[in-house]
Each structure stands twice: as structure tokens, then as C-alpha cells.
Length: 166
Image 1 (spheres, rainbow, N blue to C red):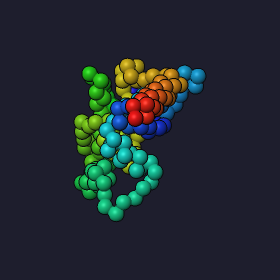
Image 2 (image 1 turned 180 degrees about the vertical axis):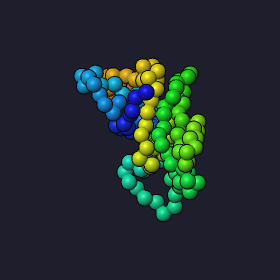
Image 3 (image 1 turned 45 degrees about the vertical axis):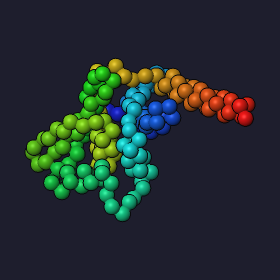
């Protein structure tokens, strides 16, 4: 198992989804930096972004509410683990301590991460997931920029076609 840090949260214009980008907390070979990208829903991305930007709301949002419930029930979020990937779907667990009791809750990675960053809890990934889904950071960023450029060119071509038809 490897400890991760959330290094970026980007928006994929094509899929209209957020992408959480993780790196291992301790990188042994800097020239081969790998990232673990996980595509998430826009609302989950927004929730994570709100916390990363330290935005405060007068009433608790969903992930704040869940954290408050866990704490009011004398629980503490110990850690979250991205456990597996199956059919292009990532799975995670939220590990909660309540006294001497350990509780493990199945979760989507986006919800687990949203809770972890609110509770300052560590984020881990199984070695299997890292081997299966991690990609070269530079390559990934280049692909994302290329996709965006292609989309911008397609939009420009469509706009030009509209002008020619009038």
C-alpha cells in the first residue's frame, strides 16, 4: 500500500468531469513521476475544490455533514484507501475509529477523498491499483492539453462553418 497526496484537481472539458490527480507522497525516482488519475462527478469535484480553497458556507455541505455525523457519534476518520479498480470503476474504503472499534465503510473514491481532506486523514492506494492505473505524469498532462486543443479547434471550425453558411 502506498500513501498518496492529492496534487491537482482538474476539469476534463470533453467528459465534463473532474479528475483527481494523485502522486505517491514519497517519490523515489523523480524522473519517473507517476500520477493516479481518477475521473469523478462534477459535484464531488466541486466539494473537494471548496475545501481546497477553504471556502466556508453558513450551513454544512454534504461531506461536511457526514464528517460532523461521524464525529458526533464519537468516530474519527483514520484513513481512506483506494482499494481496487474493476471495469474502469475505482473502489474505496473509509476507515473509522470509534474507541477500540474499527469500522470500514465502502465508498466511492471521490466521497472518501472529500472526507479525508476535511478530516486531515491520510489517503492510501493498494499496490495493485497503482500498478494498474498510474500513468506517467508528463504524458498524462500532455494528453489532457492535446484533448483540450483538439476540442477548441473543433469549436473554432464549427463556428467558421456557421459563418460561411450565412
